[in-house]
Amino acid sequence: MKKAWVLTGLLIVGMFCAAPLFAAGAQDAVPTDAWKPSRTITLIVPWGAGGASDLTARTLAGEMEAVLGTRIAVVNQPGASGSTGQKSAFDAPKDGYTWAGNADASVATYQVLNYTPEISHRDWQAYFGIFTPCVITVNPSSPIKDWDSLINAFKTRSVNVASAGIGAGGHIAAEAFAGNLGLKYNHVPYGGGNPAVVATVAGETEVVMQLSMEVADMLRAGKLRAIAVLDNKPLQISGVAEIPAVTKFAPTMPSVGFHFGLFIPRAIPGNAAKAISDAFTVASQSEAIKKLAEQRGSVAASVQGLEADAVMEKAASMFGWLMFEGKVAPLSPEQFGIKRP
Image (tube, rainbow, N blue to C red; front, side, top):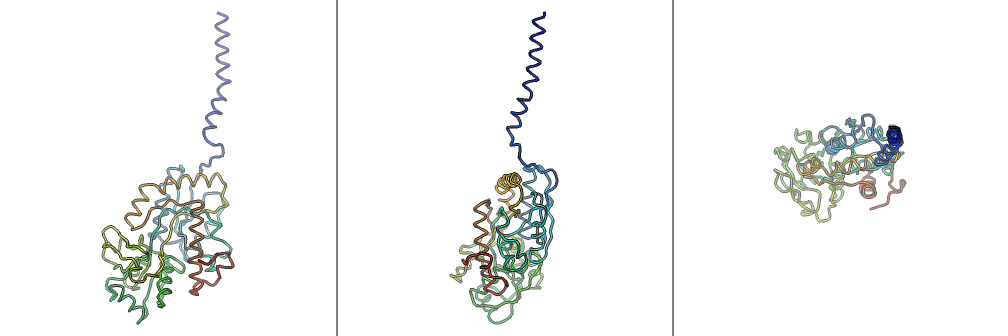
């Protein structure tokens, strides 16, 4: 009987001694410095609702919430071509809880436009989920029916061209179009891609060169007419006749398209950056992003890290110098170490 009590005691002691070891083993399975958000993340979209930045950001956020285990609140804060909201995201505590949703060209040109001269595009880590080209579209009641009538209109009268704002995708597209063909136009900026498209549909402006994501619905509804896509290959949008490539009419015209996604300050803690990166990988490869791209005549992407850095450098070079030499941007890209394309 005494031996039985001794053995029982040893077993009990052994169990208590082993418990910490089992606990330690369980903890080792998950890195002790893994970042798990403890409150809501704020995602600032510095444009109006319904545009390419907004649609991409909301889709990515919806997919990343489940991975990170917290709510991501999307807040629209338009102003100054997106630089107001972008700066708000940058000025917030660098703790991983405040993001921005924007495009490569916009963030890459805020310095030369003198909107945020103290903040470089290199201060952000970008996560791109969508690539979308710009499309030259007109109001259906416009006498512009095709490429020849488009060029004739720009040569013979003042054409009102809407855009999401100075330095936004549609504005850069218009500058590339006019600059390469030696044309002039009247720029009418709005507070986002969707308002610019709606204004053209309503007849406030005649032409809009916003992104395929932003014009797809109106093209399907017959409320806009497509003339050409600013790319070297035709564009197919479901429910819309194939849109010819601009190089069919102007062989030397450059492609104008943009990457959309999330921007997070590089200065956040490393474990937060790792968790966000992992969540983005899942979200950017989701069916939701693929469906958004398919419906909007765009391409699903999953670009981050060094690849995203290269995209940003290219955007800063190409679009920064385009805006400066077109006398839209007051500051030279050279003073920020941005090389010519």
